[in-house]
Image (cartoon, rainbow over all chains, first blue to last red; front, side, top):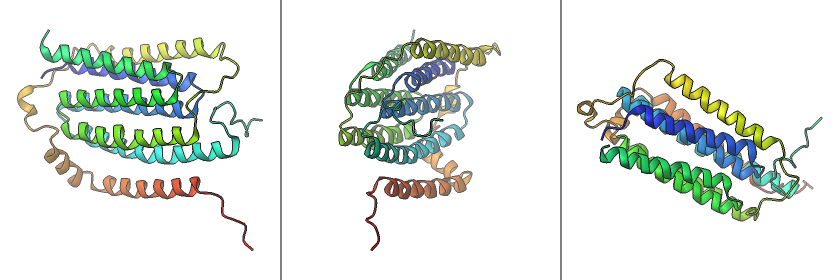
Length: 101
Length: 172
């Protein structure tokens, strides 16, 4: 099983870019949030690829921590979205303009 | 073209297609399901890359717990359909240009050094990424970060409960 590391890293870059497009274009807060998860996932893929290429198990440890932090982030982020929905009755990110000058 | 490479390209195509479909679909539930497909595909890629433990963590935590939480919130809020507002006229091309610039920058950063494809030495990969090796590294070199993550998860849990509960009634 020998896949060149550079191929995997290119795939990770493409997935990361798709996540960036999602954050920039979608106005549904939940879908923008899912795009952030896509970006985290793409960076994890690059970590795993380099961990294998360099035979360093630290890359796997980092991915483990990234997944744990992502779980915490999703819990808090979705609670925030629910709270915003309760007050605005919408999760369109354009509607959340209460701090606009 | 070895079978490994064929499998890799098939999985890569599936992952990119699932990600693109996630961005394109108007229904938030379909988006979440396409993201699950993408995460499972990436988990299979982890298996190909000698990361069996991380692949299992990916399936249980990401594709399981986190996406169930997403689907639960989407259905709780009834936010499947995106509200039709004024169209994003100029933002969409600008975002595509910015994303293309980012991809070009990453490609330059990766390949400017002129290094060829980094091929892992298969003989050294015996037992690499197994639960034993991960556990040994996690509980020897990374013990304090591991404990810090447990405190972080507790704090996130408390924060989510505080944010999402109803406002308490006025004290009499």
